[in-house]
Structure formats: structure tokens, C-alpha cells
Image (cartoon, rainbow, N blue to C red; front, side, top):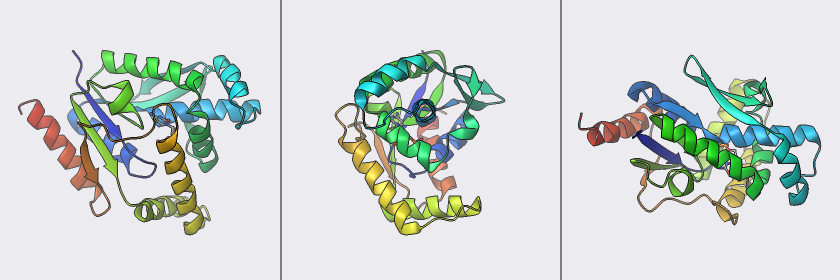
Length: 223
Ligand code: DC
């Protein structure tokens, strides 16, 4: 039986940075489910469908085949045969992913792929519904969060480091909107699983958070 760690939390809580580091240290595969929803959103954006029209999205998403492969430990998202990693981490695609991911037809195939990956591999998987829906039996569940102000500042600094001009207040407003949408949708809303450990990273450094999660893993494995 595989060993699975589920990490959920709102946008900008540091899930991917932390999960990636834990994966490396504990010899787990890192599965970034947000990247899968982003790949679907990219496909829908490129297709020109109206993102407010659920019927159009439900029909069009059937034409997207999304798979995952690993190259030197890095997750590569393949959309209809194309490596799309380079297109996924923009605000536009993230926003579109938050708008299109509530559509049941979009979620269905993603969940199947995610469950299969977790069955076949010892992994740490991050997203919004991993501990609640995708891997309800995960051996360890973490709910990672931070205040909206801190998450906005981190995002601002990340974009500034890439040379992108941005407005902190606007970033915070976008994050608040995304949180609301992810937490209030009908299907698989973002919510802390009853058996998840809450980790508020507002005043914690990456290393401290990573170490805390690794400690839990080692304790569970009796190391
Ligand atoms: O984690 P992220 O920012 O890459 O995710 C982008 C969007 O995808 C997020 O706003 C909601 C959606 N998502 C989801 O619905 N379920 C997941 N398991 C992961 C992401």
C-alpha cells in the first residue's frame, strides 16, 4: 500500500514550495493538482470558450487529454501531447483555473488521474480537496494557510522578483476573490478535513514548516 500525504489550503499559502521540499527529503513524488486544473484552464482559454458558460466548458473539456510525467523528479503536465509547464503559472491561467475547476466534468477526469497516481506512488499531493475528496484515507493530512495580507505580499514579492510590475492591493483583492470562489463552490469546496493538522505559516519560514511536516512523516513511519 502506498504512503500518501495530502496538503490543502488557499492560494499563496506556500503549498507547492513546501510540498516539493518535503517530497525531496522524504523520497516522495510531488503531485501538484493545481497545475492539472491550470492546464485545463489553459486549454479552455486557448479554445476561446466563454468561462462563464458551464455548458460550453463541460462540452469542450472532453477534448483535453491531460497527463503527468516526471523528468528528473519534476512534474511535467502534458496537454494533448504538449508540455505546457511554461504556460501555467500566470495570474490569468490561475484565475481561469479557479473559474473552471468547479465544473463537474472538469473535475471528474482529474480526480481519477490523481487517485491513480496516489495508488501507484508514495506521494505528497497538494490542492484544495485532496484530504477531503481525492485521498480521504491519506496517512497524513495538512491544512496549510496564512493570513491574506501575508499571502498577497509573498505573491507580490514573487512577481516583483520576476520583474513583473504589480499592485499589492490588486493582488490581495484577487486572492480574496479566489479564496471566496474556491471555498464556496458547490463541488469539492476548499475546507479543512476534520483529521487534518492545521499549519498557519504567517509567521513561519519555509524550513520550519518543511521540518514540521517531515517530523510528522518520520513519526508515522516510526523513524
Ligand atoms: O493551487 P493553484 O493556485 O495552482 O490552483 C489553481 C486553481 O485550481 C485553484 O484556484 C482552484 C483549482 N484547484 C482545485 O479546484 N482543486 C485542486 N485540487 C487544486 C486546484
